[in-house]
Structures are given as structure tokens and as C-alpha cells.
Length: 425
Image (cartoon, rainbow, N blue to C red; front, side, top):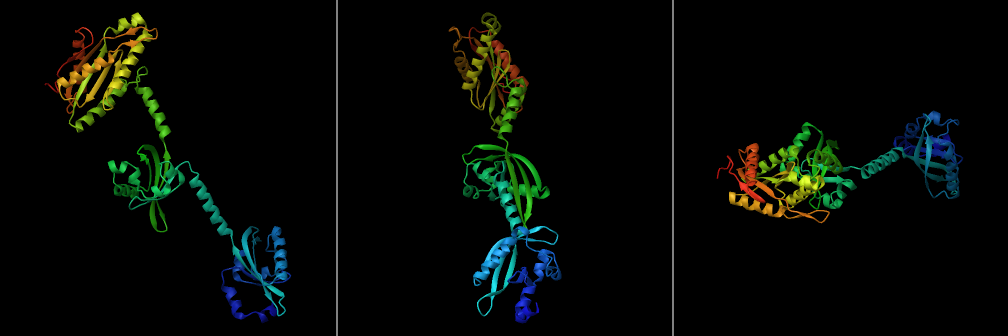
């Protein structure tokens, strides 16, 4: 070491002492001549311990790399070498590193010692592994993941599923805000209100819908968190498609609330649907027509043809009623051979009876049986008209029922109208 110190420039020596990069000077045979404090910290040894011949700092499986590098530098001392290898920490664990090694040459151009600097790759490898793991978890996730600007709701980033499921390219989606894809914000909530809610409760679980590029809507559930990163706040949303679950739930609801024969709403579902129709009609200040439809002499038809034919007649009538009525109308089977039809937007007794007679004409067409025989059932229809506000549903249905019994007094398919207390005109 004294011989080396005599030649080694003291300023360079001090520079190596303070550099954070582990630095080593070795003889051509591999013996240590100088180590800096950064190397001691890197390997966990003191300088005295490192200078001991008993300490081996290279991983046993990489000792061959040392020999190969020294041989390469001895053969061509003007060319530096860079090679990955492993070192051994004092506690026994290995450290991946990048060895940068150059030769000092004497007056004859021969290598007289080697200067090495070691770059610790463990943190880099761990960081790369973390990025790889995160990338794979995010990109291969079965959930869409979004990073959103807190202030304006701008979508800043998302995984592949996040844009493909909505029918966008990533570039297209990143031009949008959350309110652009979530109808909830245009209907019931502003983005500012949502952010204030998130500040009070930074982790929320919500059910909503997302609007696709083609305008269709996708039912979703989202785990939304307000997170801080580098002093800035963002919203992180993990979004799951729940359309299959909603479809199963709807099937259960329909099984419980739809008539199994005609697939029309049964009495259990009727009240809920009636409330919805009345509410929407009230907003538009519309009147509501109630029609009670019954098949004349249905018991005799069942006794003569059998219940299978009777069921076929009911299914056929239900299908014709669905085809005739609008999406805003309500058609339900009340039981047996009785049906209720509720139609918003009709304006007068004449209007109601015109629609009633049209219904009778459509649904009274002959029904072809499997044996080739035709049945033309006679139908009775009772009708009434009501204001949608201050409406007594029981009274409206009862009035239409009474009108239906009046229609039965007439021959063949017929209709009858009775004014309701709610609309006595």
C-alpha cells in the first residue's frame, strides 16, 4: 500500500474517499490495494476486514468472471470492461452489481494495477421487478383501473381493459372526463360535489353505469379512493363489470314477479310498475287510461278444449297485447283470464274508447290450434280515464273492472267506459 500511495495522486485518493460509488484498486493478481468507504458500506466490512486475505467479496460462482476480466485487461489494457456479477455481503446475502474495470498502465504500456467501480443493481432490479409486477397486475387485471384528476375529473391514465371495454382507443378515452362516461354526474351529481364527498370519505364503494362510445350503458361497481402521490391528490378507481350479475338478479326478479305462463307482470310487480307509470305521467301532467280485459266464457273454453288450449289462448292474447301497446304502457295479467292495461297520454273518453276498440280488434283475431282448428274468443273490455295526480289506483282499477262487467252484457267482443271520480268528464 505504501508503494501505491507514493505513486497515487493524493487529490484522486481524496476524491475516491468521498465518492458514493464503491471503488477498489487491485494488483494484477487480484490483491486489494485500496478500498473506499462506499465499498465498506456496500459490503458491510471495515477496511481492515476487507484487506484480510480470508475475506472473499465475490460470489463463488462468479470468481471465474474476475479471472476472465483480468485476463482481458492484461491482453488489452487500454480497453475498459463492464460486466454484471455478484458480490457477497458480510451477512452472507448476494448483491447483483455492474463491475466497471479499467487498467493503469506503466511506462511500457503494460497493466500494473486495476481500478474498479461497482454499481449496486439490487435497487434497480427491485424497482424494475416492482414496475414489471405492477404493470402485469394492472394490465392483466380483470378490472378496469383509472387514474383521475381530482379537480376536473379528467381521465389521466387507465389500463387496457379500461378503454377497450368502453369501445375507445386509449388516446380517445384520455380526452374524456369521468362525467363523460358516467351518466350519474349529469343527472344527480356534480363533479365538485363528488370530490367534496371523497374528501370526507376517501374510500368509497359505489354502483353506477358507464356509457360506452356507442351510447350503450354498462352496469359497474367501483372501488374509488383518493390517493396522494408526490404531493398531488388523485382519484384511483378499480371498476368491475357487473352486467352478468345484474342479468342474474333480473332473472330472479322476473321469476318472482312475472307470470310464468304469459311472461307479463303479475300482481306482485304490478304495484311497483304502476307507481312508476303514475310518477312519470304526473311529471308530464298526463292522464292515464285504465282498461280491464276479460275473456268471455273462458271456463267453458277450458272445459271444451282442455287447459292446454286455454293456456295457448292466454299466451297468444298476452303476446298480441305486448305487440300492440307502447313501451310506456303497462300490461299485466291479474290472474285467470283477466288482464290490466294502463296507457298514459290519452286525452278523452272518445280517445280511450277508440284505443279500446282497436285493442279488441287486434286481439280478437282467430287463434289457430295445433289440430288446425281456429278459436275466436269473445272479449270484454272496461275502461276509464283518470288524472295522474291525486290518483287512487284501487279506485281506478275497480272502475275499469265495473266497466268490463257492463261490456259483458253486450254480445260479442265489446267495450264500455265509465267515468272515474278522479276524472268525471
